[in-house]
Image (cartoon, rainbow, N blue to C red):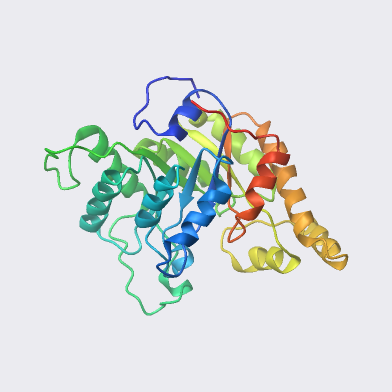
Length: 315
């Protein structure tokens, strides 16, 4: 994507990407309680090892501390959050209210998601809202920012939220031939950056990126490739068989199984993650990586250093 010194949000992540430097983002999961020190400890652990950090919004439909509240805590700790917002739990009134609140608290990045269905979480009896889908949410945030209008069309007369708008995309979900088209819809709605599903099948991701580049989509948004270290053979099998849209090749399962036999599962998981980063880093159109070390934030610093992505640039 062409370098452009002008930013829409003044977020650090946006400046890194527009400067043409390879970006690093990582995930920080809020706790299942009200103890802010949990967030502060994770922020201290991650500080300096990424350009911005995703604060998940009740990931997998399990109740956790609010992503907006946790985002304010990480700002206080000196790192930049990417506030994740799902359509699962709020209607358009609540989402716009929360967007204004998040901006007032200092958030400059937002990732727009539909959200995992509530039946997979700890409250399967909960009523899902899904008033909007992720593409409509992206468009609503863009109109708030660029046109200073609420979703109903009324003018926003006060200060507008200046967000760098993100979206997720899964190159591995079926039908494969429509995945790039879906990406194009999110870009048209206003997605400034994209974080992809976790990549274990690098060759399939390479095919998707070729379609994306052929369509010129990499020139309209910044694409961050999703990666994650596996902890164990059990985690590898669970992701392959139980996580929708996840593509874990048998050769990865075999490597994790062999490593488990000599009690080196975590070591092999980080090695695989580093290999994926090395391969995607060389692909045309990939502007950075997004590290999703689910409840294993301790691994992020090692991954970033061994991938030669440390220290992070300061702008």
